[in-house]
Image (cartoon, rainbow, N blue to C red):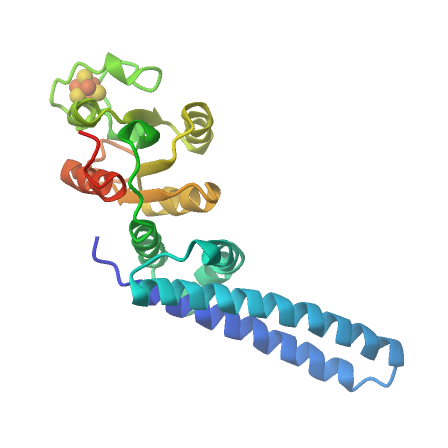
Length: 252
Ligand code: SF4
């Protein structure tokens, strides 16, 4: 995936500037009132706002630093999560205001996320990694219930599930198929992985990455030659590369 990281980081920064502008306007209106209590309230609001902006600004700065220095700073990860979590919806709104395609922004976000996860230099055991697949990867005419147990797949070659099952066996990673966010959360809760390689579309992947909090998630986009949610496809080599990134190839 070759999405530009600066799109997402730039929109994050611009979103923050917009919020600061609105706060400045509120401040202007309030200081033109002559009621003392309003002014006291205003000062209190400004102090709180200044702290929030400082935290968000530091969070964005931390993301930029991690990208520039090509390394992760564990002590700053909480700040980056706060900045992402609080400014993400505003970032999408800002993108929409500028007419930027939502999927393009989401791709950029996933690219930034993958870069930051890659820079954590994780060296996990393969049994601590889970590959999470969307149900739409399965051939729509297949009658085997792979969401219950992926071993029900007969590896007939009509979809990539068989090849991914082989990859999971080869590296001894956990492999699960989810029909949606609820089942995905259930698999994470049950298998307790230390990292997840998730395959999905832009929207599901970015929602999943936001959802999982501190759990590192490497996102791999699926291809939709037949439109969304039907007989989708994925590059198995890209999943293997993601696996080697967080296991350092040491789990074979
Ligand atoms: S590879 Fe597995 S899941 Fe896909 S169609 Fe064949 S049996 Fe079904």
